[in-house]
Length: 221
Ligand SMILES: N[C@@H](CCC(=O)N[C@@H](CS)C(=O)NCC(=O)O)C(=O)O
Image (cartoon, rainbow, N blue to C red; front, side, top):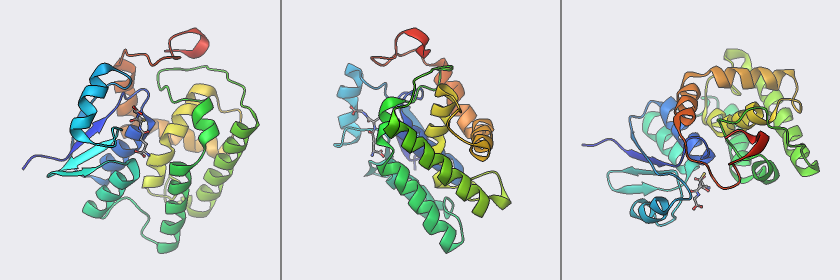
């Protein structure tokens, strides 16, 4: 039987694709990948073949379509038993942190789009973005202090929560670390050195597409 197929967008820009891909890679599920570049006629034409929701990521496994990054991460965890902390209390907190990312931080996501290739961007955060950054700093620091003694991740061992915050790590690498404290910075460094994110980032560097608004200036490409 063929492997599940994960349909993703551009590695440079598609933060939801990155989350699903990291979660599946870390839980050890084997899967194939099909990439469709966002904002192209090919995307409009092809995505409907995989998902009526018309968004990436989508996981197709033996005819079942799973069309949301968190549902995909949960599917990987269900299939392998890996993805969430073993301790029920830590697991509840990890799920809360993940859900907060899945449904929140809209101001930050809007103002600082993920662009893995770009470095040295300086976009002064407005107050709503600063509030998001403050909350992320506080959350990461608290998780590291409370749960981080068994490893470098938010809950010690790598979990879906780390996959969920990886695009924030990428944004901080692009827009600067000025707004977070030393423990959060250590977490950024550990995340950027992590092999799966490094593999995804190397593939993003090899991409050449530019999304509208990402073409010029001190923004990188
Ligand atoms: N809540 C969804 C969000 C998916 C999403 O917004 N994906 C974007 C790319 S990162 C997309 O497919 N955009 C294409 C479009 O809107 O046409 C998830 O978690 O999977």
